[in-house]
Image (cartoon, rainbow, N blue to C red; front, side, top):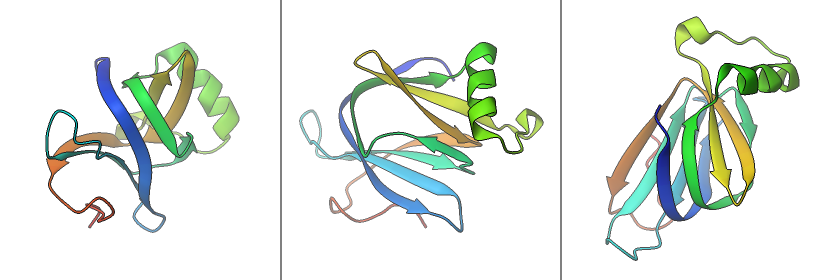
Length: 116
């Protein structure tokens, strides 16, 4: 994933342990009436606060991935499209290990999850 900038406050809205899906949502409604959801699928590692503001999202490079693999200590399968995604905000780096990231817009109520 190429480095992408997300403006606003994204909150940790929902996480399904059984489906390994994480939902971060921006519902500031400053530039649009729609929510912006970041849906992380096949999650195997989380290291993020409950709210992240104005951040870049990108795939960790090999050197960064090695650090998280060491911290994670579990099975890691890049051949199955697993990757570590970095959320960089205010000179801090947070990490989510998962299979893929979806960016979605919707008009759900602020607390209604888009995780199915």
